[in-house]
Amino acid sequence: MDKRPIGIFDSGLGGLSAVKTVLAHLPNEDVIYFGDSGRAPYGTRSEKTIEQYAKEDIEFLEKFDCKLIMAACGTVSSVAKNAISHVKVPFVEVVKPASAAAVKATKNNKIGVMGTSATINSGSYIEEIAKFNKDIDVCGVSCPLLVSLVENNWIDSDNYIAKEIIKRYLEPLMQKGVDTIILGCTHFPHLAPIISQVIGEEITLIDTGYEAGMKAKEILLSQDISNDAAHKGDAVYYVSDRTQNFSNIANTLLGTDISDKAKFVDIK
Image (cartoon, rainbow, N blue to C red; front, side, top):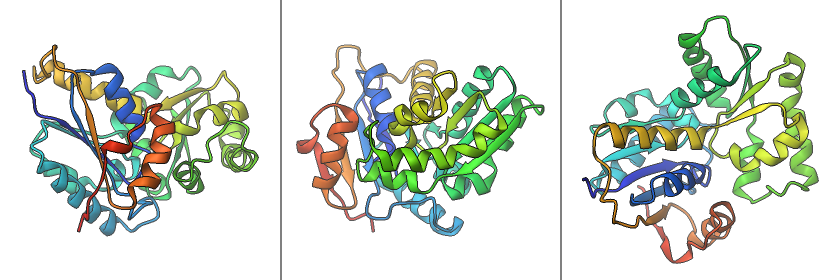
């Protein structure tokens, strides 16, 4: 048994989709979450800046002696290959597990990817999906405004503005006739109900946060580094901006009050 915590980071609130999965499916594990809300969003930054931010985020989590670190961020997973390669403990990113799930789910070999500009421009999902099946047609759409919708808690299914923005982003994917869409930024699963309303329930949505969380579970079990079964896991949340703003929205996304567990950290 390994009592060390799991470290998870993202540019802001999006990675909470992965945290929610870990808390539900790995209830004995402790989680240290870092949301870099003070420097969000990552998706519009240069590759050099994203690499630097990822390096600093990872170094912060390493101070807690984490047994596994997860980049619950599609942008970091797609772009910050150098920072990721230096992690000494088991590492989970979102591109590989989400791609595997999408390949398994598609029936017509047409997969859509919704992501940040950096993620789409990197071609990471096209490259990864091609490793499974080169005949699959992948259509990527950059959706930068969706991060702001989540960060500002505009995620209600009856939110007209959110619905109209999502409808515009989905048009190319609908024209392509995709039957599976990867929500390639961990912010986007929080908008899944609206996305399904717009594109139809018959389209399979791949939740990157969920797939990354399940990959973490697989690694812990295979390497025998799970926590004691009698231990009740807990989570602590660090943010690089105001904790109140983060907590208010996180309470909605996680379905539980985390106000007393949110702490400010100056990442620099």
